[in-house]
Image 1 (cartoon, rainbow, N blue to C red):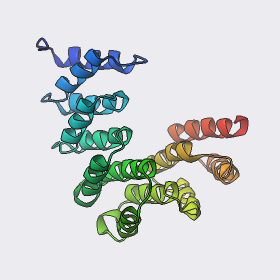
Image 2: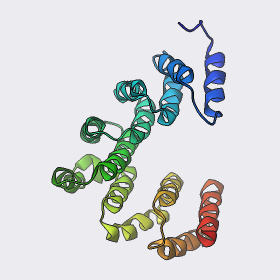
Image 3: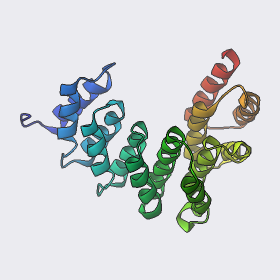
Length: 226
């Protein structure tokens, strides 16, 4: 049993865990307990931290948090579930993609589903589901979800989707630009390096917010020195 703690004490403890290079079993147990906290900020922080845990308990807690009443908690849970590749988690994420009411949370479910499907191997059933995604009104109406959709297509073997993915760097929404750059970090490789480099250089020539330009410049530097 954990002692009764204030919000500040819980937050400080989770910050301490976040700064640790490796989480111990005791740390993970504490995070799993705090994942039941009444405050959504604490539950969301726990969901984000559990991506660094390998225990099956962490996976079960994340699946529970994927059904949380708070959309940001669900988004964190979907994101962290990418670290637990299994058919069960894959099924949970597919259901989230179809039924999740929040567009941002749904976009994270798509990303994690794609990563897990890539890890498990792409079978006919998953290829069929990928085809169905773009037809879903919830996906088509959300720029976040369409960005995640084209990321999914790319990592699951549709290399021509890179052009569509790079197009999101032209979005008028700086959050979409940030997300696009972050996803490019995950997929940059010798075969696509030049295309990504050119797109990022064009992005920096335009007037963009600091958070976008800094991340873009950092990725460009990585590409040039890799």
